[in-house]
Image (cartoon, rainbow, N blue to C red; front, side, top):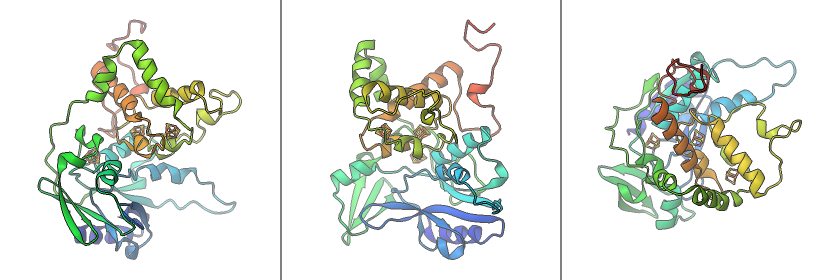
Length: 326
Ligand code: SF4
Ligand code: SF4
Ligand code: SF4
């Protein structure tokens, strides 16, 4: 992607009177880090980037902002928020529109057609980072790592993030401005991880998740980073009644993770952010993708594709394949 064009467009949008601020990405302070960038005017967009390191789904900020309490007497700033989106991020925006978590006239969506992101953990493992700020670029058949003044070409398959191997929608599904021509979609890989778990006996599945959930430290990073976990009053925080106790043990950890997964069924857009930020390396994507597969196979529904569609869990059709529906 042409970074000059990106910055020029971002500057124009950030300077608009009806835009409160623009959210994009910029280099972090060391190594491979890339940080979200908030620009309140054109000057703030001068260092914005789009690279294979821009994994963070910025749509999360659209709803976080609504949670901030206003000081007494202060009027809300109702101008639009502009944000840059990859294909998966745009599905979060579309799903938020479906759920009326945001309204269309509150956002300016800047689409970034996405050739695929690197897996940050894999990258650091194979090409250890240093304090120096490193960069990544796309090449015709992979990535180019620029660090310590040297360029290293890496084949795409070596570092591509799992969610990108499986990606069916690399181009934004909703946008006001597109920063580039659409990328050519690739054949998504078979989701062998989910198939493998499906192939286990019930006891085997239980053992697997018992081991994984036992490692959960209930930091709630998965919930906080998720663009679709935005209830102001999360059921998991309630005290009376208390649906899930705060103790960190297998029973409560399981209740937490299963409750979250089911609340995301038919809503999760498979951006992979929950798994990326989990400090305990719990493969949360496997749960979400299993539920997404069920919803897709049984109901032919995929969330976050059509902002005009009805919410999956709140719509009903007479031919739904459920015997108990009269
Ligand atoms: S899942 Fe698709 S849109 Fe999202 S980062 Fe990967 S390739 Fe890009
Ligand atoms: S991010 Fe991981 S460790 Fe933290 S609450 Fe979620 S599953 Fe548990
Ligand atoms: S549950 Fe995970 S993969 Fe699904 S939308 Fe939330 S952060 Fe993304």
